[in-house]
Every structure is written in structure tokens, then in C-alpha cells.
Image 1 (spheres, rainbow, N blue to C red):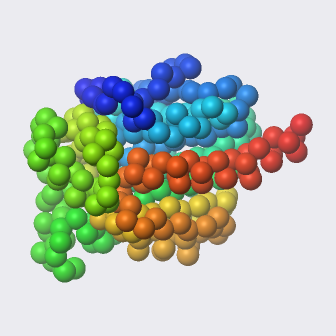
Image 2: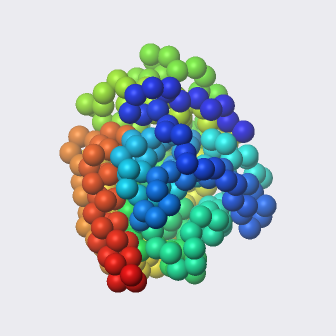
Length: 307
């Protein structure tokens, strides 16, 4: 289990949940789940990415929990969810289904938001009955469905074998990240954030990412390297919006554009100028606003119709 390291104050410090629970996945993996906000509020489910945790969503929870029921969970091996021997996209989909079953009533609708590997989780679950039962709408933030290493711009070289080899070596590195130092913050900012990211944003991201255990980070890097979910994008039949930063080196805008073109019901593609891979932290007002729009259009509207 990872060290719980994150900022302790300010807008990026994790709020205290109304309640906590454990969801059990199909293979027995135990998932730490947090619920924030009023029980009768429209539901929003937040799915974080590789090397992150529920702490990553602090800015979303602080804003949305005022009038939404916000559900967030730690992916297996991340945050307070114990590591498991199985690391596959199928397991990610199983885990999301387990969380939905543990937190939502049958037929209850929610906006499901996935960032990076969290977006891949939602895509992997696109054909699952439980996702279709609960997802009124989906928001995919800074993610992709295939060719992650090939399209990555983390290594500043022209596309080709050398860039591919170096990118694979960097993303799959076994070395521990170590403490959050000024050099570590600069490296993380370059790789994952836009050039205008404020120091408090970089600090929040660095503490969360560096808390991820080395073995967990390494194990999931193989899954990302081999990712092939293009077919599953076409099975996301509910309204699905896409957000990407134009300065995203991890999952550049080419991925967002391809997904938007493939989605059966694309609810819009938003490209954020100068923003990097960490869109929920770098542009919280814009991400929160998009979540609110989706909840108002597809969850609140459904609640009124059922009243």
C-alpha cells in the first residue's frame, strides 16, 4: 500500500469524505472508496490515473460536493487500495463495476469522469452492462485508447525508433522516484504539466505521484505500453465529452481527436491552450464546469423526469 503523501492545506488538499467504504472486485481486489457531498445530489464518479489517488481530485471534490454526491476511489495498488497480482484493463473495468455496484442504486445515473488511466478504465468498461446501467454521461480527460508510447512527446525527438525506445524505458523505469525535490518537481512539470502551471499545482501533483509504490508504477506501465482499446471507444454509446490540453506530452491531442471522431455520441471536444496532462489540477474551473454541464443535462434532467 502506498504512503499517503499529499499536500495538507490549500485548494489541493483532499477534503474529508462524508463516508468511506471498501468495494470488492471480481478477483477479490479491495478498493478504497470515498463519498462526498449530499446523498440526494446528482452523482459524479471520479476515476484517477496512473500513479495517482483520490487526492488527485481535491479541486473537483471541493467544488462539486457542495451540491453533488461525489464518489472517488483508489485504483488497485494506488492510494489506500492494496496492490494485487492482476494488472490488466479487464481488471480496471471489473474494479469500476465493483465501485458502481457498491455506491449506486440499481438504475441510478451518474456522470463518470476518467483521467488518463482512469479514462482508459471507463473505455475498457464500455461494453459492461453495469456501466451502461449507471452512466448518464462520460467525461474523458487527457487520455487515449492505443499507441500511447508511439504518440508520446515526453522525449523531445522526432518520431521513430529511438524516441519509441527511450519513451518506453522512461515510462517503464523501475527506479524509485524518491523524495519531492526541486529537481523532481521540474522533471514532473516538464513531463506532465503545462509551462504556466503554478508552483502549488506542481507540488500537489509531485506529492501524489511520488507516493505511488515503485512496483505498482512499474506493473501498470506494461499495461499502458500494450494498450489497445480503440474498439471499445466505439462502444461508449452514452453522451461522452473529451478534454485535452494542447501542451499534453503524455497523451497528446491526437488521441482526443481520434476518440472524439470514433465516439457514437460525442458531447464535445475541448482543447485547453497551454494546459498539460494534468487537466483536473491545471484547469479545475474548466473541468468542473464541464462536469456540471453534463450533470445538469443528463443526470438532473433524468431526476426531474423520474420525479
